[in-house]
Amino acid sequence: MKRYLSLLAMMILCVCVFTGCQCSHEWTEADCITPKTCTKCEETEGEALGHNWEEATCTAPKTCTVCGLSEGEAQAHVWTEVSCAAPKTCEGCGLTEGEALEHTWVEANYQAPKTCSVCAATEGAPWTSAFEVMGLSFNVEEVGVAYPMIIDGQDFTYTIESYEIFASDEKHPAMDGYEWHVVSHITECLQGVAPYYYPTYTDFNNYYDMESFNKSLTVKDNYSMGFTVNYLGVDYSDCLFQGDADYLDTTDAGWMRKETLAFRVPAGFDGMFVCVGNADHITSDYYLEYKNLYTDSNTRFFQLK
Image (tube, one colour):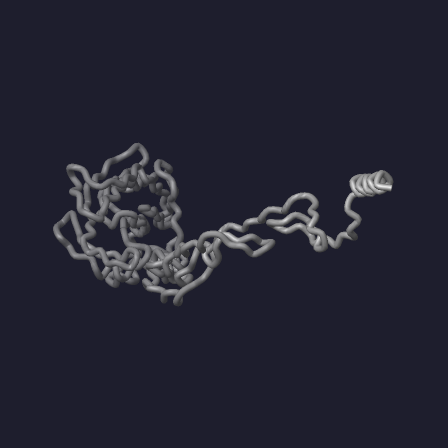
């Protein structure tokens, strides 16, 4: 009998070994730290998923997007300074503090519209130059080209022989914030008019603001004049015109007059121009002088830019 019972026990043990646990599993899904697990017998399958980390931000530490576990601390905000366009702002999360600044406006001038000196924002447009208001345009663009003119029915040419911009030389002293614009131009009569007769008239002016330029002219000596120009909203009163050379010569066809004119103006200023036109337009009223001279289609203009 004992032998029978022992054999029976061994058979039952073998059945258990070969058939495994007979539990009807109820599984919980795997998570970041625990594999798939039976809630009844705690048997497991596979491995834990592992954390899915989201890097730390300005508002939260390093955090698992699955289970919410966090490590460490949130990062510090990386601030961009307040400006006219935006308040103090975190580059990482976009958080803002306070309000944007008010613009610091520099009023419009001939070269630039109304402009914020802090952020460079603009409003409107630059002032319109007097030259454009009069409907004028520069009709001498190239150095070395003889442009035709007709004065009192006679043929002339107008040529820019040379044009230079420099800070200084032996004849033109340097001044901080200024530079020299030096132009040599030639007027040539092609029809034999006597050398002492000048049917042409040479002029120079500031195309941005002609009347203010004319009013600012002060004679220093026979060969130089002082004047003031407004550049980028600032008045520059140490401008200088200097007549460097003026001579007349006869040619096979008639005569030629050459002048070299030098202008000390603010560095970068492009407002000076020289021109030649019909001398008959000159009157005692300077406003009418330049209006009648300038609006004549035969007047030749060259911009010192």
